[in-house]
Length: 389
Image 1 (tube, rainbow, N blue to C red):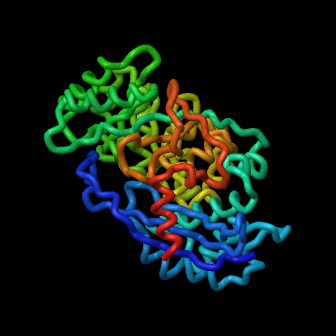
Image 2 (cartoon, helix red, strand yellow):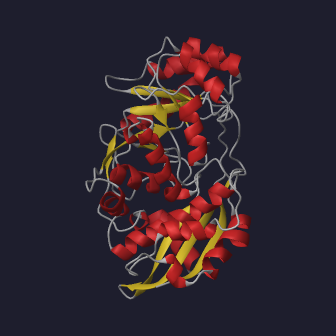
């Protein structure tokens, strides 16, 4: 059993939308195929992966450092003890040969992209959905395929006023979501409060609004927003300041008593641990958004979950960023609190398998081997084209 080849392609996900910090007009991602010599139904097993939105494609790092290291390894050094499947932890360690600790940067995205494809291949070789494979090998053996999801949107774009914002949010509610999220920090505090109030007026019983500043604020502005937002019944106030400014996060928690969320731009277990140690996050109400596709993959995410447990945090306080099926599988297999979703954005890479609908804020995952990409027709077309290159 061996990995025959690994293919990377950098793809555009450009859009006219922007958040408080960046626009997406030139955004890219890396799409990866890990081709094995295992034959199922007359075809080689191929695992697929890609990195989440918000970070650029990592083709240079993937092709120059990480693919060669994997392909240079002896095949027996990448398989499990039984020799009947790849071992993602061994593949991960092979990728990280000669990499110094710290300085995670874009490296974590490159590794996380390949790691996703490896786990997809592993579950396909085992002929199981990834969520089942994870539950049996790294969880308590039980799966919960009914996963909470929220709709992320509310971006700024030219000419978008309150009416268009409300129409967008109403469309998510009409599709079955109970929690919707919008951006703040790209306008004045006064304007953002008007935007928030306009959305709150359309919410019905059991429906909530979350807001996301994308790390835009300094300490004073994060506190000013925190005081203003305290009068609204928000689901959470997300990423007020720089993700590595743990003091800002801790001080914000002293004045903002509602739920806070952060973590999507922390790319290692060590950074996540520093947030827990120094960021003032509260395990009874706050949410952690670490995204495995940006942070060295599931191998590192398992370390992060172990760390959280040692600090008294439940995995149910984790709702990953990114809106991709990998995190959905992790949520179902390891008992996370849910997953982000982009109903109309970043396609075909976001979203659910065809036919999966949102009902009362939850989706039921189908019984598809691997991560489940084969169930999403527009996405698997792109992946099949890649694997033929």
